[in-house]
Length: 84
Image 1 (tube, rainbow, N blue to C red):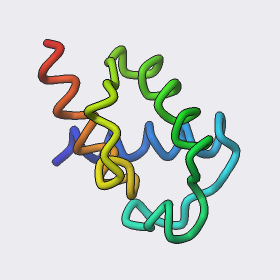
Image 2 (image 1 turned 120 degrees about the vertical axis):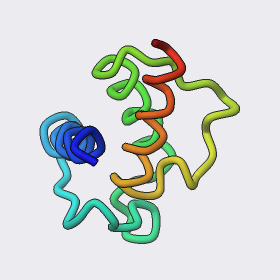
Image 3 (image 1 turned 90 degrees about the horizontal axis):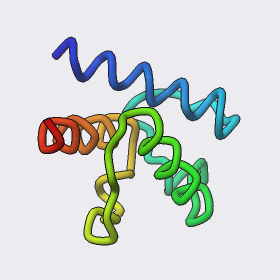
């Protein structure tokens, strides 16, 4: 649980510092609230790859992987474990 909490914080920081938007909670639907759109998703993927040293493939670009900070953290945790 601590690992996911740490990922939540790091991903929230990417949104605030790099993408320059504040996300109200880790469960906020980023697409429904228009915080994230297709261009924002590309930007986010670049930052995730740099921050966590993971590769996001075309097959990974399922909307549910990026719907919220919580789902992004779960997705990222799996990618980190696969890379290890």
